[in-house]
Amino acid sequence: MAGLLDSDIAISTRVRLARNYTDLPFPAGMTRAQYKKLCERVVNRLGSKEFTRLDMASLSPVERQVLVERHLASKELIDRTDGMLLLSRDETISIMVGEEDHLRIQCLLPGLRLEEADNLSRSVDAMLSADGYAFDPELGYLTACPTNVGTGMRASVMLHLPAMVATGSIESLIETVGKFGYTLRGYYGEGTRADGDMVQISNQVTLGISEEEIIGNLSEVVRNIIKKERSAREALLKGDNGQLLDRLHRSLGILKYARRLSTEEMMQRLSDVKLGLSLGLFEGVTFADLNRLTTLCQPASIAAKLSGATTSEQRDEARAKMVRVALKDCNVF
Amino acid sequence: MLCDECKRNNASVHFVSIINGEKKERHLCQECAQKLGTDSFMTFSWGDVFPTAFTFRPPRAAARCPSCGTTLNDITRTGLLGCPACYSNLKSDIMPIISRVQSRTKHSGRSPVGYEAPKLNRPMEGALNQDSLEEKLRAELADAVAKEEYERAAVIRDRLKALARGKKEG
Image 1 (cartoon, chains in turn cyan, orange):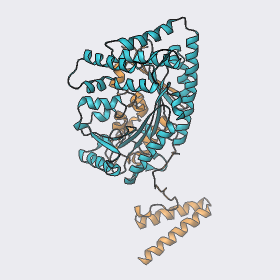
Image 2 (cartoon, one colour; image 1 turned 90 degrees about the horizontal axis):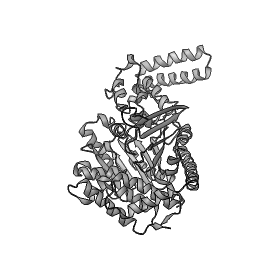
Image 3 (cartoon, chains in turn blue, purple; image 1 turned 45 degrees about the horizontal axis):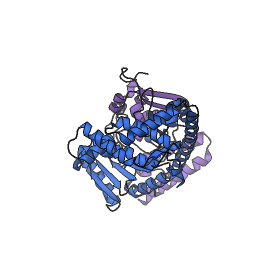
């Protein structure tokens, strides 16, 4: 799996297709009866063998929030009391029913695997198309928001770019990326590393461009960013007066031994450890392990694991314990 | 840098997009990003971030889609259309928005499995009653002859003949 080669930088890949049926209004204007009809239609087409049906009404608020943390459902969907999510057994494909569009078919894979994600979402798309998609030969797939019309496809890659954030070269990256109709979005700025130097890049334009072009161009842009991040990392290490090395080692120490960790601190420290790992300073843990850990240690996922009412101190202690266990064998190279 | 929305907190969530050389930026604090529903990687929707793209000129704002009742005002407010038919029913208002946010206006991607493109030489004659169709075709024929487009005229003439034949046969 060549795509996984760059998994220290490319965290995950997502391809999302927005689809609607001709015979129903868009979800915002649907009656309960129409929504029910939509749900039944989707369930009948997919069958229950490969997909698990999750009704928001039967999940606790914490369980619903876990779906958001895992990027399987949006906040908008979990807030709908009659909302429904269909989830493939391996959790790589999720179908949000009645979110902004009738269907949001999404494929989420670790690493940089755009073509695979496209193929997987396409196969589910074909299964659901039999009931008559709203499609116009001029405008393509018709969606509730004109920003999705055409292919209805949004392809994105989540990238870990600590060096580009640190050196400020992310600013010029935004300019370059934007010229190709791609959008960069992320948390960064002075003193803010709340999301652990994570940046998401997605296609902006969905009309007048084919799915293959969207995927192909994004792939190329991402490969270029990865190259730039690698050289920024090398430059950062070369020009370091010891401060960076100190911070990275300090972060590993804290994660290995801390008794309480907030989500923010964990995100920042894990970003450092991942950087150290990719620079060859640390060993004994994989990027996939660390990425999984990040998801499992988000607030709702921790709360769901502890079950019952918990204080933030209890959650921080549980988080610290999970991190300690995960980093047990991670050491200085 | 201060948050564009509340103008109070420091902005830490940044959105940048450049379409056709036109750069758009939004800088939000975490709180406002959350309020606008753009805080999680998943729900990031362009319309939420750049809502000004959806404004219409006032005189048309009360226009309504006959299929679902959605007005252009509603669309400005929510950034969303009401039903798939809004695209054709409010076409003259929606198309400028589409070209603004997409920069292109013609789909060039996949079609649904089994989708058949409408045949251009065979308009949906059932939609018009026969007399008004005949009238329309006669006007088109006159137009084609006036413009000396004889090939087009011949096609229209044949369709008129076919219509007349169909009428006779009942």
